[in-house]
Length: 272
Image (cartoon, rainbow, N blue to C red; front, side):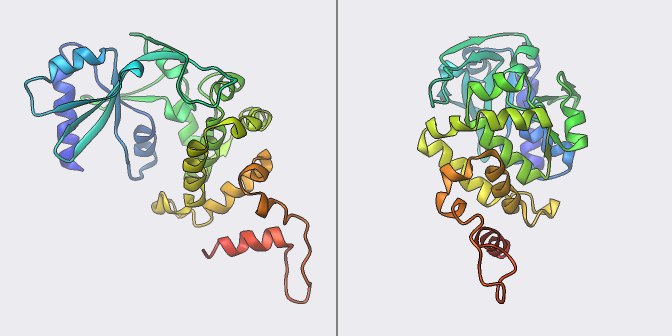
């Protein structure tokens, strides 16, 4: 980890004459929680073509990921981070695709923050100074273990239905509660999940099923069960796992079972 931090700070120092480099998203949130950070995402106002020029004669290697989205990978040995230019974007709410129909780069961090899903994921940490920039109240959400949307909930979920599943995953993995209006709006938009690409739904669903293994230091041994229960509350379980959903209310012999078939299956999952 020390080597990664050193290389990240070196990267920031190279970019510093032109812009401030910020770490953003889950890594900042997880650092505040005192848990292991995984993927490193960084951003600034610089366009990727400028970043490429700055790093041209250094040990850092820049490889394209999605230039339309202003995203590249920056690596050096085992160090890898994803760099993205501040941007705004808009989605076609009738489509199941994750790719925005319109993308515009910006120098305004507040606009970049608003395009993100949840306030706890819209925190920016100055890589050089360690100062955290919180434009939306994300620190309070992390402190209070709350998930609320970075913009109006209807805007956030209509933009991309996958955010409903991401909400469930983060709540399960981190032991957070979902703010009431955010949850109710997610419930109203849960139908959008069925229009998403199968691969995207599968990836999120699989992460929910192993949510108890993500942050072992939090001791959330039944996180995956909570995730499944939230999917049921949102009306999504019928879409993703109808075989389990149909077991609700199915009674079993009282002599041998304390729970109906649905809750018996959830209890069995606790030991899986």
